[in-house]
Image (cartoon, rainbow, N blue to C red; front, top):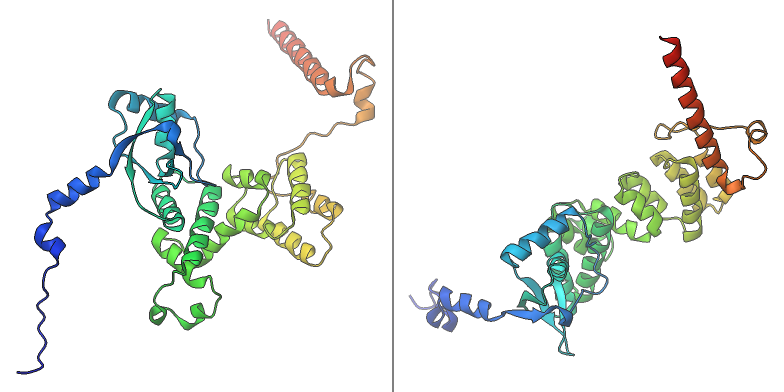
Length: 316
């Protein structure tokens, strides 16, 4: 019988002397009303806070019932507070005219706070691609600084050899329900200029073409933005692959971008092209060049009105 180990485990002191009620009370002790002007937004917070219709509804709800779910903050060394989750609640409280915000104060370092901030905001119903992009990048950077890794024994060998970020990227993907490659695609979007990011957020460009464009430098991206505005269309996936290849070969000039974007594409709106020489003779010289379009549109409105009246007269 000697040497036999028992499966019995002694309860800890917390188990013996702490009840669920006591633990709940300890959590409540960390919830307090904090002056809004003492709460700073999280640095480089990736989620946009918009004064839209949903925000106005939240404002009315807070006016009627107050903040039901406390925001989460951590106290900084200077005595102020840093907002981890609840940026919309804070903004709505400001718009509602409140001076205090109900918060849960947690003890976290910057990297732990970053991870919690990303996780809590990913629960939102609508998240823009740019928000995911910067959130995933912040989360990845925080995990790398922490040296966080998943269990090597449960990870395929190919993943172990795929680079030092592979395990962290996979861990993020598992938590948010995205593949490792999808996480990497979103993170690539952080290399886009704001104008292209806005096009992606508006749904005018899909993720994969945007990823290809993320490999271009800023000058090439801005040249492309001009062509997108001029042609009123975005490049196809195949065109972005060509642009990336030409850029890597040092051949992607503004002229090359213009040539690619001038190709007819399914998503290109039909354009009306007028001959300048033919139109100019009907425009008085007193009309400035920047007023030409307005003059032509008004002339067309008058002509359309004339045609309607003539049709009505002829139908009598």
